Image 1 (tube, rainbow, N blue to C red):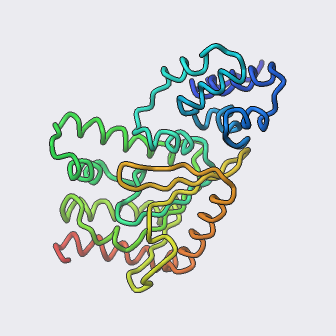
Image 2 (tube, rainbow, N blue to C red; image 1 turned 90 degrees about the horizontal axis):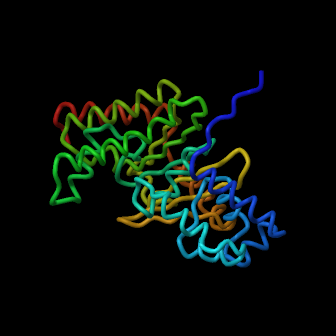
Length: 274
């Protein structure tokens, strides 16, 4: 009995078609990248279904392959439920074997409780309905499914102490959120470290950073600010991000000390202490 082939996502089908059309045109990934004005690594991500080209990239692909707008039109049907700046990173999360995340002021999205996520969305959307918030919370909490799937990635979570102290959603919401993170760390579902205030300046104090590694492709980095984000696949930039993560991690508390600090912070929130 033959092995059942797993269904492919639309992104994977898009990438497979791109690979076939490129091969039929007699082009290597590097040659196509030269015409699209991007790296061969990025072409590799397109063909693996890990990333989608931007509309102008898709148009250049069509010109290079003589596909008469085929890839540009198909791209329009692959809209993401995530914000444009995060859509590619969200797709890559599903494929990563290792995710190393650093948070400067907020709990990373995939670790947020529904109540914490709701408070985050409500804070920067002054005109919102309960239904809109519900939709956003569902989208965000669904990301956590990769932590329980059969191919779940290894997760490293590095938090600035500010994440523990800022009371998002009120004391009980914060206590529940921090206990959840601590529970996950104790259960071995993530590796947890905290950068305490006492460290002062550290290598990652400028922004959120997520590093992702894959079984059969080059690693990437994702950095994010307010309503903007950038996925980095240039090897030099990714190496620089990895080095900064390692530097910051070297300044962090041990996993035992980090877990204890998170528990203490949760109890302080529970008892209404600042």
